Length: 272
Length: 267
Image 1 (spheres, chains in turn yellow, red):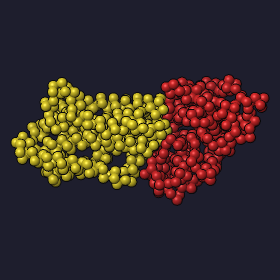
Image 2 (cartoon, rainbow over the protein chains, first blue to last red):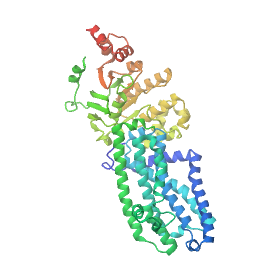
Image 3 (cartoon, each protein chain N blue to C red):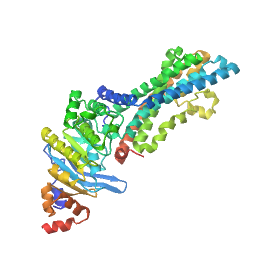
Image 4 (cartoon, chains in turn blue, red):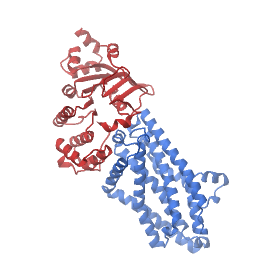
């Protein structure tokens, strides 16, 4: 894999080859497919019943129908988007295939783009059944959100890719000893992104931190839409601006970590 | 030949006018306090097959990794097929390939799927035809649709070799290509490499602990010890210089520090 990522153009052919590689892998393993489906389904069923229960006992939630279940679906887009990206990357580490890829004409940007496409494919496999379950079991139609759903989705997936790119760089540099970061980093964001409660619940100083995270804008936007029937374009644009910075920064960090891995010889011993 | 004699006779990147396949110029790699590769220089002409010999920790793998661009040198330069590595690797990675025990082919994918993916990465034309050709040449046809993880060690090595040859590379870097193979399979792999080199005028750099393999395949041998080049010549010349009949004996002389004695005996 060359360091010169942008100088000689991006090859759709090579990106397609990598997507094909992950597609073959997905089809070869039913546990991998099942894992994509069952956890989102469990999430939506659990939170759907919680929503149903408290809506019967609290007038606010009766009015703000769907905020919890909507939050669960959007959180899963964020979390599953990152996992979908990172697991495909980890598959290369587990398979000890990274050296083959690094020595091929594949460029880092093409590798990352293929991981992004795979995160969308894996997300679709997990999230679409989840949304259908929410519709049929709890009468919550996430697609009724309409165009705002696209804005929510794009901002969440961009954040998930930024996190995915960054942690992949960390694993590349530090080996599989850093694998646990892949599974846990998004949970650091969870309390600050205000998924289930408004930002105003946080102490003032923590609110400043929360507003540096694009998902905070998305979840505030979702509540504004479901409770006040208002689509906050300003929130989505702010999130998009921060996401742009995060994506560029994470790509820069990935290249720096790749270079550091080459400097320290970590690519030859990509184990623990 | 002493280290100084050889250093003066080796070409530098600046001096070399021939289109060498690989030119290594005063290459150094330091990991913390360890000098894994210590100021080595050599140049491999196109179409040659060279063996890189040395014990564990001699610096062979690090040298090959720097040639491939997987490890950045601390200092010195590497040119591959006329391009600087790793700065200009985009220009050459499609024209070279490698096989190493440090990497595997994805286990869950079938042999055909793996070759298809790598063929597409290398933009191989008529990929189905190329896979069939390799399957015939390397005797893969019986297990083309079997998962790589379910193959024997010998079959996996042949698949790894097929991947290394998928793009018909001008330069092939091989790190222990016959390690853990039974003698029959190892001999079979060597025969194929010889044939490939002849038919394609390819350049091969081969790191190995197997002295018979190096004697049989290589027209030049570079012996490394503690990151430095201990000797660099044809197998015959090296054996004559050490007054030995096999490279294995030479290897033991070098490894056990009997180098000077052996050379003195010849002088």
